[in-house]
Image (tube, rainbow, N blue to C red; front, side, top):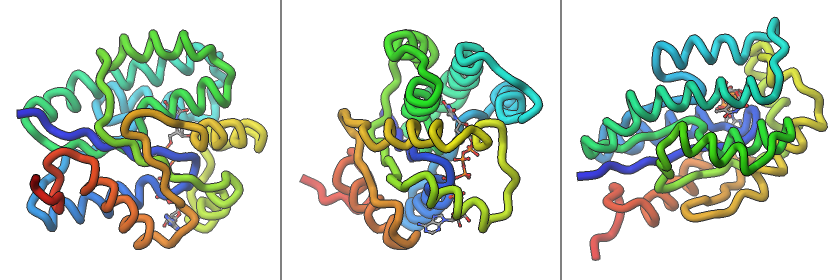
Length: 211
Ligand code: T5A
């Protein structure tokens, strides 16, 4: 039996963590216990890499940054995501490969072909069944984060032009299983929209009409 891999993506403060938690609650209410992961992180080595990547004390070359994100992803995919999917579990991820395309290619200017080849090496070609992209203008995301009172990490401190390129890459993302949601709506509405996509597109998801 193979599981289901659902990813939530979007720029800073778009509401990914909020939506992942709400989707997890919704799945649990339907009797499915999801495996929750976040990127970068989710393994001991991945969490150490996350701390390094987000620490404003480090100035990292764009390719160093790319390879660190991919190293953390390699650990997460092989130690957690693939075994969970092989066991028939539902995996809900807060960010995955589209974030690398948005931040390292869109934001930093890393060549897309290099990203694709290196990312494939990290994931072994694993693709999400569904990628929910939360569309929100970056300035609104930063307003939300200011309200939440969290300090800014190394990447959040980049200038508005960088975050504009990141947001544009997310906005333009297309592909199998990629769905855009209007993240300017209230959290309950975003959950409603997301759940409708999960039920319609994810094989075997709770709430899906059998046929
Ligand atoms: N990164 C990551 C890369 O550069 N390359 C990569 O390959 C990967 C994987 C990770 C950083 O690493 C970068 C991207 C990031 O800069 P992170 O902390 O995991 O950092 O990601 P962030 O985007 O920084 O996470 P945040 O927690 O800041 O944002 P979220 O999860 O999008 O937003 P959330 O849910 O925490 O909500 C933010 C605030 O808004 C409210 C919430 O209550 C909260 O206060 N909110 C809403 N308000 C109104 N309407 C809604 N619909 C709302 N939804 C949430």
